[in-house]
Image 1 (tube, rainbow, N blue to C red):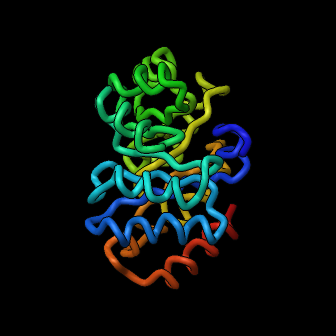
Image 2 (image 1 turned 60 degrees about the vertical axis):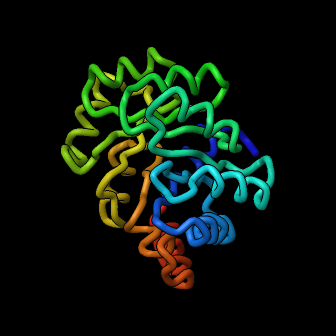
Length: 205
């Protein structure tokens, strides 16, 4: 495994798994890995999220980029680290950013405004999750990159295949994709359909 940021920049796709079925969520994570997705986060709103992370870590080994998402509090960050998360994703600038950084984990911190971007970086964020990206779209990303040209941005929220290509062309280092990629797989849906969607996304990247 190389570092989180180099792999994020190289592979350009962060898969986001969230769902109501623990076993289905685990199968989704493993299927994504089988299809070559190098970075996956399991949202803490997923049923049994920490157990999913533990089981996926045991199956994928210590080198996999397996993260926890929707990390809001310092306790969330510590529990995710204990479960085997190798990076954290937050929806906002919260205490979880500083705690994750102190634990030595890369943090993809949620931010939307210039003020939030500065605060996230000051708290130790490794990259910025532009969220919700759909609110301002590609124009908003371009506007933020003018004052922050060296900060890695990862748009998340409303990113489908067409939007993914546009964000990457506008300078995003990667995109974070949930339901347009995962579909209903984490609720027990068709894993073969998931594989087909993965292949479609990877062709864009």
